Length: 213
Image 1 (tube, rainbow, N blue to C red):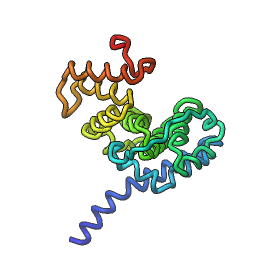
Image 2: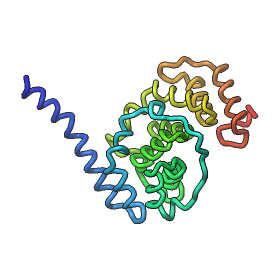
Image 3: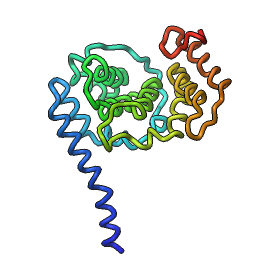
Image 4: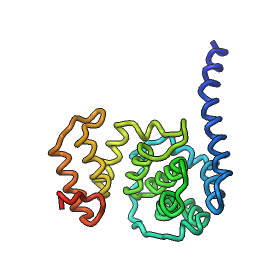
């Protein structure tokens, strides 16, 4: 019985180990200055642990306000250090830089943990981004986080983010009711109410559909 259990455990561990090694190999082949940052994220146990968590479960309220910083694309290592020091904006801005200013293929393995850390530090919009990245991001085979893509986690994350004033949370939850995602029946009235709330929160945001302004 012990031998059988060990064999089963090895079967579970081997793909994870291979996947982790593949991630490190991929990161080592990326250009600087992002390479150093990617390797730090890939090797950090706290960042890696977020791949097994739901964004809604890590959020902690904070009075800190988000601030934009475009320097993260040019100085990602400094931005990561501020993120590790507890600066939620730096976590968010670095993830955004990876997605836009210096886009990387299959970057979700690295942007997701950054959004998750920003979420844990009190940025409700980062929780939305983490959930959306888990479901819709560019992932290497075998790395997409199952917990964060589960229908219950997706709905809970967007619903709670909306309640905390994140317009994109309202928009994404509205889509769930519009489409009748798994575990949720279609409800156009509920979807409309959520789209209107997104516009109330951020009328100039892309989360505000023109028909609901």
